[in-house]
Image 1 (tube, protein in one colour):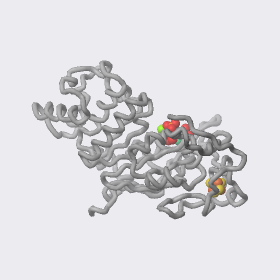
Image 2 (cartoon, helix red, strand yellow; image 1 turned 180 degrees about the vertical axis):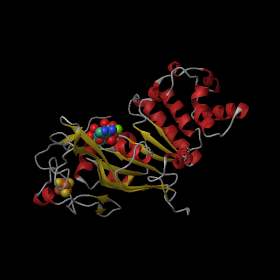
Image 3 (cartoon, helix red, strand yellow; image 1 turned 90 degrees about the horizontal axis):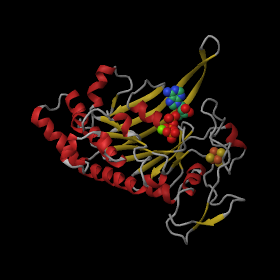
Image 4 (cartoon, helix red, strand yellow; image 1 turned 45 degrees about the horizontal axis):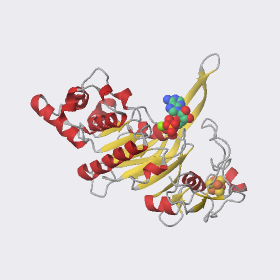
Length: 341
Ligand SMILES: Nc1ncnc2c1ncn2[C@@H]1O[C@H](COP(=O)(O)OP(=O)(O)OP(=O)(O)O)[C@@H](O)[C@H]1O
Ligand code: SF4
Ligand SMILES: [Mg+2]
């Protein structure tokens, strides 16, 4: 039974391994360990951001939560009720509550449909309104995303990238959803348009009490919107903390490296840029011990054999690193003055 303190979404020990087939007979030759045992929760009305380099498993988490494919292991709960083991027919009413906004709205907006039909479709599918009530609902949704009502009689190609993302958000809100998964929803937009869409999402969250899982590789954008941040590396969460703590006093060396690449607006501020050498290793054959050990500037023997667990390291941070205290500076890397952003 749900209570007011019950997280809206809970993910426990989630794994998604994609089988790899090959050889002459096309048998299974291995797995892509895309998501390899992660846990997090999101409270109602909260934004949790999932960040990390390309290929670390962010989208796979989003798709697994949405049950776009079956999971390998773990549990996903909505309002305390497991949804990972439901049949597609039992899942259908819950789909009304969970919607997604992808990076490229063009691929999800039918170019031959007018906006009215695009936004009305989920309302009709879930049997929520018809006739003039349906038009009113579409009009209300356009108001919500700050588009003029007469936009409903136009086609997606008549809108800019930012406006199309507003349409995708209106469509995601249409069935009365309370969890929206934004997968790189602003990544392809120009800086100023990005900020407008982020502000819109923030306003909608206040107005409607929305819960957001915000997937992004762009930490600078995340900082303006999120309540908490989960940092992923090679299928694992390596740090989880509230926004202020994560941006102010990050613990994990990987988080620090990611943050060191975010421009600081004040040109008088000096800080060390942590350069990570080498590519992210393959999720088909992840490194032993700490998966980050092949690139970590603080690596020591234990890291290569023992996997660190996500643990409380103080100041409200959960970090998966063997070090209790991570040094503030990395040897042999220069401290530079930041250019204005
Ligand atoms: N359907 C699939 N079959 C096999 N491997 C997959 C599949 N989907 C994703 N992967 C692999 O799983 C890993 C994680 O992919 P995912 O798309 O979740 O990463 P991501 O963090 O969202 O990356 P990006 O920032 O580039 O969007 C990658 O190695 C990817 O190639
Ligand atoms: S456990 Fe070791 S390799 Fe991993 S992040 Fe910490 S110091 Fe670096
Ligand atoms: Mg992705």
